[in-house]
Image (cartoon, rainbow, N blue to C red):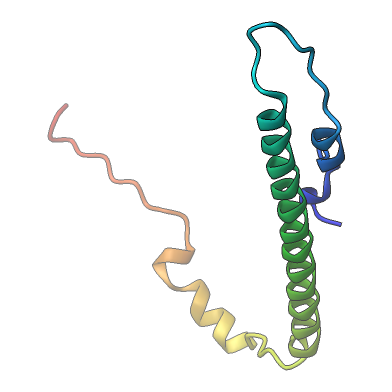
Length: 104
């Protein structure tokens, strides 16, 4: 389960069944309900696409873990000679700080 699987804050059915008070100068109910149906369908589509993306993400993670397990044993570990040479490289040692007497 990924972090994107959080429950939706609003569902398509909540949008479809929303009721609003009718007033004298309000919107046309038919237009509001048509728009709400459109929004509900878009929410359903987004939930489907999110579920598909999460499934693909999980599939890729599983393949990566399997690849790492399969190749961990075949990866070359540095031998002692390589470690000795690596430790002599300046980038692997503590930095040397030079103090200039020029500005004193």
